[in-house]
Length: 311
Image (tube, rainbow, N blue to C red):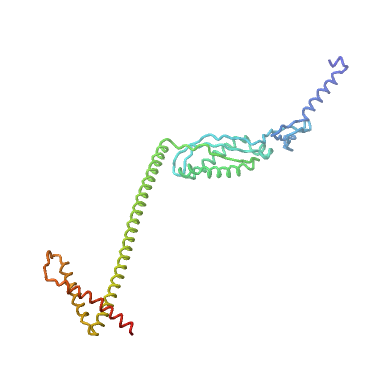
């Protein structure tokens, strides 16, 4: 073909050489990657995504680094806790390369280095905690792992964004012991709640009895107060009657003397009738005299009132 268009072997060689130089000079870096450029084996610069140019035969591509966030699975391993319990632990880490040159030239096999670093720190962090503490504080473990691994991998041009413990699996005998312990704890809480209920019931019952006794005592006190008030009024009435009769006697009224005799007479009859061994009482009783004495009381009262009005 080249003979037909008049091109000799030299021209063909030059054309092929130009194509090779063009291929070596023009590079297209895809999105999400950074390429390092080496000149005579030494790092010179980093190519960002897009159309880029090199000096043919002098510059060459050193490493093609993925700059997107990457998931790193950390294999399961046996870990001994602080209280000498064996657990199986595995995790997952998320990291992103932030400096392509450091990731390419500061560490060999970045993923393997991160994996070993993560496994070592998992053993260190969980090994510093008791079994119960490690099982109940995964957030603390994750945060400690993230801090340590991110700090250790900073010189590799890597940013560790997250470290998560996927599973912590104690041996079967420890799981069985934990199940028995949990059952015992639940039974203990149930018994405590039942005892608290009985205690509260007894307290409420005692408070109810105390309230009833207080109300009963208040009722007795009120009744005693009313009884005392009634006796006080009765005594005042008797004192007033006695005063009236005494004034009548002083005035020479014979009916006042009959009043006192009738009063004592009726009191004696009341005491005899109220005796527990009294069955039948048969005594002479002058009812007319007793009635006359009682009628004399009103006369005495009228006389005293008339005297007070005259005064």
